[in-house]
Image 1 (cartoon, rainbow, N blue to C red):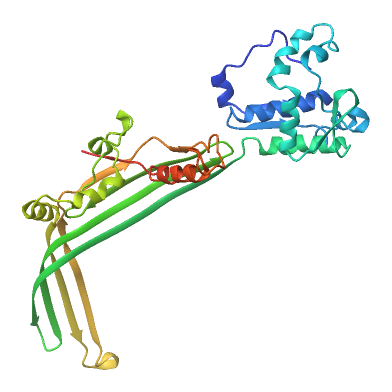
Image 2: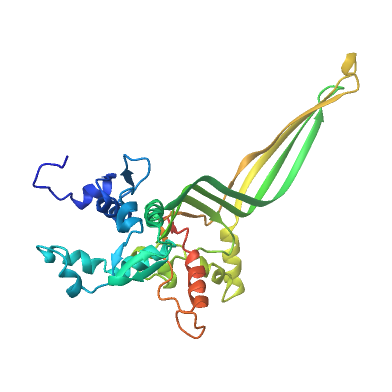
Length: 354
């Protein structure tokens, strides 16, 4: 049963937020429904095709005497004379998906076409089931995406030097206690975390969206932003860390500038180690030594710590455009791959915090 007229167009915002459902009504409707599902898959989150029969497209299989002439190669002037009574109603659809595109599209699914009398196009196998299989395969693969959710990735490193002085004292014949005071000099510190990362790989686009943070302190090493290095191509990139320019911070104009950068980047702190040993001299445990210790009870205050969080903007790759196999062309395969490699450095964008 059809919905009551007049039909109302569905707003794009609603269409994008809902699941589209199709139901087969006949041979032409089955093919049209499959094509509509494929088109809608690029606009909505998901598409569901409902089919009441055991196999989709059963009525398509009886068209063309079981061979299914799925299109006709006549131009519009010739083709429109066979459409009655109002051929202009079909004209927009004809030019939106002309016969040559229909042949190319089904050919991309592996269906080999053959042209016969009357400009009719059949599958080369002369089996309408192959047309149905091509439609079903295209529907299944339309908008296909692979999604990976990665979370709780982290890396932590701390390097420091220590200067210590200790003392031990014998409390009893069997109990000894000791302590060590340590002066700490922090040499390098890194704490990087990816709390959540979503990788989505579709037919037309790959994207990476991450949530994470990085805190680092390394003497003589700075983390310039793209705004500071002039690498920003948009004002929104001014606070993004320019990882390609990090090595430039090791260049100094004088020894004084170098030592100033060194000492301002060091961390300083103190720590305490406590320990004790006890020797058993009787019973089953006679001759056994028991020891306990508390180590590195202290802190380091790091200098020139850089804090950054991931940018809310995802990294997106839309594929290669106008790819040329000519190595001398500006859009050669080698150039496109090099460009992709450069773009991979922006996969995880970190914005420096104040």
